[in-house]
Picture (cartoon, rainbow, N blue to C red):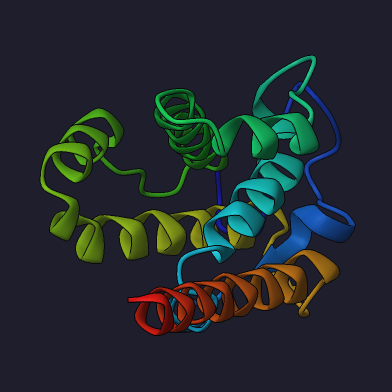
Length: 172
């Protein structure tokens, strides 16, 4: 396959539309995770399921359901595994460089600090697959409602923790 040809996809046309044609810069993803105190990971799960899953799974999972399940301890590990597995499959379909998904997942699960390397690599490979799948026509993702909600919820949790600490200190 030459670089000028879009990827072959038995589940739909090779050129992506809307959500499937967006690039999220690694730096922006990290910044959103920091600014939202980690809550943006739920938005990332939603975006990834909506954008990637229909390209590799038929029928695709529900983005809302997968994001909800991501909030449940232990089940969240399975949802994270599925998301990375689908990104790896998407990279293979797009004929771009994939990543050692299972090794990345296990290492990040066991040694969380490894995520500082693995998460950016996964996002970078996803971006490359989007570029290949759209023949270079993928665009930068705009901030969406899910992104803003994650930031607000993250700050609300921080405010709640501060309030709880203040009340606890005042009560003692």
